Image (cartoon, rainbow, N blue to C red):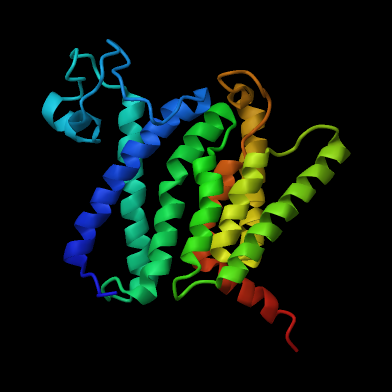
Length: 279
């Protein structure tokens, strides 16, 4: 692989951000209602097909000033927020890679693995937060997709081996599944959805079982620090829009926000922990 300079990489990153924004915006609108992603995009107001040109994020803003070209209706603020948030996470992934892994050098085969992993972890934050908080669901394209992506990336240098990737997915997902079943028997109700199990399995496929365990621990700590105060102050915030599981708080966002932190610092934390037992 020929090294890619920053002058070429930055436009590529912005292009990837635009593509991710287009995909995740459609995923957020359709996945909770079981609507196929293959169905043509239509205007939510007049129901006319939207031209492909205006389906590209930010082009509609530039040419139509926050309005749909077909009928002149205003674009959804939520949709625009998803577009900008997704682009921001892609740029942030590039910044994190540059600070922690690039050492000021162009993108090369040796640094491709952390770049792609951070890109996946950061871009998936937006749909995980929006869909899981609103509907208590996690899309398979991200959870199962993470397992597939993790195994594929394991063939690149600089990361874990394919065997460690497969074993990490099995141990992380299987361990969390058994733990969730145990807790469910103790408290008499489901404590965690299967989507969380698949999501952690994906992280195990990317980082290995040890770092996936760290993600689970950090996510639990963050969840405890946020859930209990929120439950006391904003009890109504626990109700979902479809009212299928009132009183529950989604765990997926805590796993998602913990994943990039552990990917960057997890090995150092694990090393410090193991060092405590050395004589």
